[in-house]
Amino acid sequence: MAPTYETRFIPRITTKQMTCEGAASCTTLTTGAGSLTAPAIVCPTDEDTGIFWNGTNFQFCVDGSLRAFWSENGLNAIRYGVQAGMRGYRANGTDASPTATATGETLFDFLALGHNGTEFASSGVVRFKQDGAVSGLNVPGEVLLVSRNSSGVAVDVVRARASGAFEVLGALAHQGSTLGFFNTTPTTKPTITGSRGDNAALADLLTKLAGLGLLTDSTS
Image 1: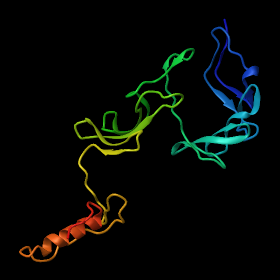
Image 2 (image 1 turned 180 degrees about the vertical axis):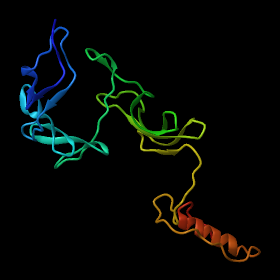
Image 3 (image 1 turned 120 degrees about the horizontal axis):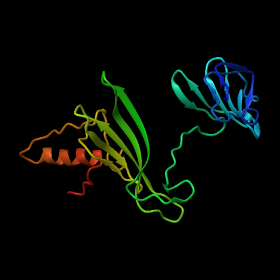
Image 4 (image 1 turned 90 degrees about the horizontal axis):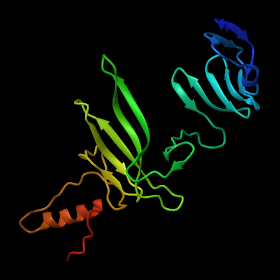
């Protein structure tokens, strides 16, 4: 009968030095802290790629360079000299035979959940979807912001399309103090003055609308 190991203190582990066979199990595994260039748990073919503990966070390193760490705030990506990022990959088919994704399919979700007193429930999503058929090696995409109302219904709010268009899918409530259209410098809400009887107010209205960028006043 294979033994069951309840506690083992091992200063450093590589996968080529640890083998579990048959019914053997390991309920507690303790390693040394490790370091950036000599992580505690490493890739068997790369001595400075793996996971280590720096006294505060779990650190994930690749080729001796920090790539991510798990802190009390959650999972964090970190890079030096280039932008940090998180990527979500989707294909249809299987690992062995992936196939192209199709327009309208969701490619990746950033999902936020809150607790309702009983369980966690979705509150909103930043959703990445394919926006058009694959063209050559390119996959056109859109970004969709989705909120969830008090009835639990998902509400599409805004969409940034592959064409560059920005679509407001619900009510638009401008909260700023200035506004401009068609590349016009934003300005404050205009006040219309002048008499209605002699068309002075109308002339002022045309001037103020032109100032917002809503029309070109070519009247005389």
